[in-house]
Amino acid sequence: MRFRHLRPQGYTWILPAFLLSVGLIYYAVGYTGYMSTLDWNGTSPTSTSVGAANYERAFGDPIFWRAIRNTAIAFVFTFVLQTGLGFLFAAMLHSRPRAGNVYKVVLFLPVVLAPAITAPVFRQIFAPDGQLNQFLRAVGLDGLAQPWLAQTSTALWAVLVIMVWHGTGLAVILYFAAMSQIDPETLEAAEVDGAGNLRKLVSIIGPGVRGTTIALATLTAIGVLKIFDIPYLVTVGGPNFATEFLGIMIYRTSILLGQVGYASAISILMLVLAIVMGVVLNVRRGRDGKGA
Image (cartoon, rainbow, N blue to C red; front, side, top):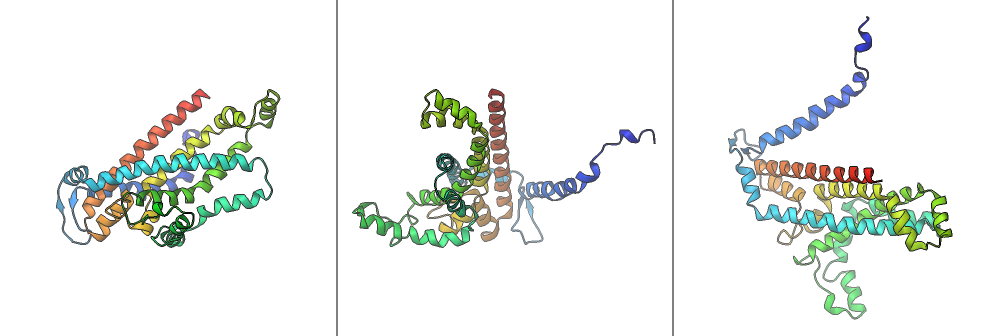
């Protein structure tokens, strides 16, 4: 009994979560790593060990590098636009416009809409005879009308626009909450010193929401790495793999082509990429925190 106080406290409470994490997540990761060394179709009772051949195949696969390229482009494009628009709309909402709550609902609504609902709508909008091309022809810009989703030069950008539309509302809400934490007396003092709205945005509000910007960068990185539904439902990864992402490649390789070993290797590479991005973003957050 005299050693009872030495017993670690709280293990009883964290044990279920620990077992769930180890038993499901890490076991699944480990088993996926094992399958990545096999030549297996997912259903056959026999498999062949191929070592690192699946990884070598991935590094030599142009479709894999196209998916990596699309992921990088999607991260930069969506992060810049979502944070820029989110910051702008949040600042406008903080000016307390009439029907501000209605604007918040309108801006956040795309976040809660399922891609399965919105994908057919955007397919129609970007169709050769869709509303976008009809609008361009109506205003005399016939030369800009084109099959947006049917050509490799525009399909990816059309999909990225849809992704920005889906995610900007979350950035607005997060920035609006962060701006609410800024001391109003600081803004009033800036006004007394003659600072205009643009100066306050750049010198006070921008640095004050830097943590939210880094958090959005992390969320954007997570989103583009696991993105599947929007590009698959809109373009199925085409045309000619122009909108191929890692999630679509894993699904197509494992389910449609029956190459589970190769798909597992791609999954492990995606996990490594996610870890690297997480470490980089957290190091950046730590440096900004020390600088603050």
